Image 1 (tube, one colour):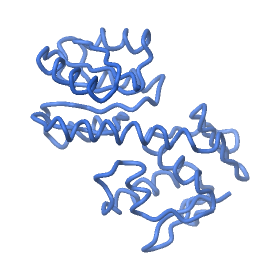
Image 2 (tube, rainbow, N blue to C red):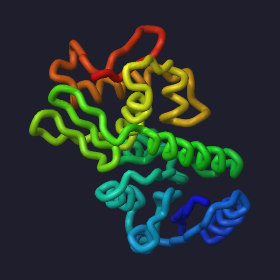
Image 3 (cartoon, one colour):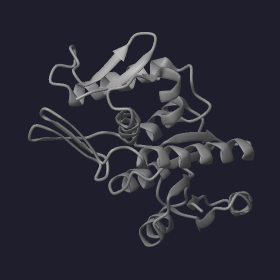
Length: 225
């Protein structure tokens, strides 16, 4: 059973999601405002958050930002905002997925399952990955290069965690995309290029000649000490 916090000020939508999530064996917590959401997050320790952006007090992006200050719990944004800039802002602030209203309940439930699976996969990653001058502590979400602390986004952590599970072995593009972004992905190789470049700038001594995050063109990626 996964404990899920649903944050939305639409009581009918809350009821619909509660019925559907409970029918799939989840425990459901409800919040109708940003402040209620943050209080419930601290008190009830949810394992996944479904978050509307249009809340009556705090903007949902601010709620997401505050959650990310303390936790890497999966957050699925559920919003009527459909502009690309809104999606990009939410994803940049650490959202794991973005679903636009109106939405299909079965699709949302599939995205919930994918987020829960990704969390389980991340939990199977080694506690730490170490290389000369580099340490990734997956339990504490703490990355250091030499004496410098590195900030990694939730997506970057998931990508590295999946590669660390197969340390030194090639992970095909399609497997990596599905593990990090969910079952609906597999052809978006440009996602991997973008995130690999971001990660290399953070963890590699020379991003132009990477030692750790290696791309095998046309095949996949590997993480090696």
